[in-house]
Image (cartoon, rainbow, N blue to C red):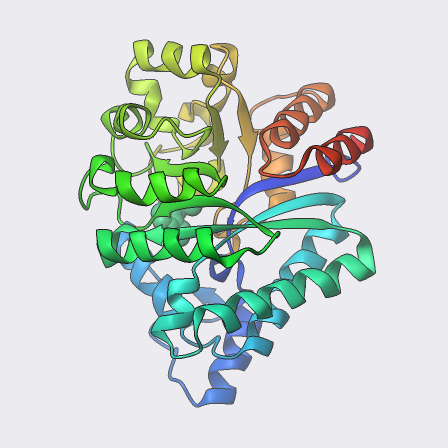
Length: 322
Ligand SMILES: Nc1ncnc2[nH]cnc12
Ligand SMILES: [Zn+2]
């Protein structure tokens, strides 16, 4: 039982957290046919590429500032109800631009959702702006420039997501330089779809404080030692990895081996309804599938707070709550 434990999430894509029922209602409101992506209350995809397509299509039914406020509030309320005290949401202002809403209105809606949720439960949240590889290096630079110039205290990090098989991390160095110069925390999706080399690439090209997933580092034990020595924090999303068949089952998932090798690991849900999971289930899996004790799970939660892209005052307050 992990329901009593305080929880923290560092890796969840906002549109990836959209509850199917809300997406259904949004599609109906705008007269959009979503039947190819959402059937019988479940998102429909069959591999990583089709998951990304489904994700982008589902995102299109969230169109206005209020839609984004509602989506953000809904997810944060769900987190708060399971004892979550802090959440970092991966957001894509570029998406706001693509749908004609504009990046500022997109972010302003998300921030309103954070404000509403915090007023009810006290949950803290910050935003990680992401670039997506499948929209090309120029769009990733644009996302970094936006995050750097926004001057929004809730935007505290920069990420690179999307189709990991497109290009190498080195193609995106300029975007990370812009984000680093603006004082944003850096994290990169790597070692999810591609092998250990993609994690090494991220360390060589950018040396981010955190890596999204990173679990395929386990294929190279020298690299695992490098992660441990550097203290690079992995945002591990076991349910996502199993749904995307990165590993065949939880027994072969390397979460425990990485932790025992000294790599700082944390637990997140990635795109929960797409992967038939939730942060609540990921914490339960930590206990039931990986055999971690409450004390070990609390230690991972503290690791997450220590690695959070947040000011020191808030970090201290959060640490005191676990
Ligand atoms: N798991 C994931 N990997 C890469 N990009 C994503 N965008 C949304 N979810 C993602
Ligand atoms: Zn992700």
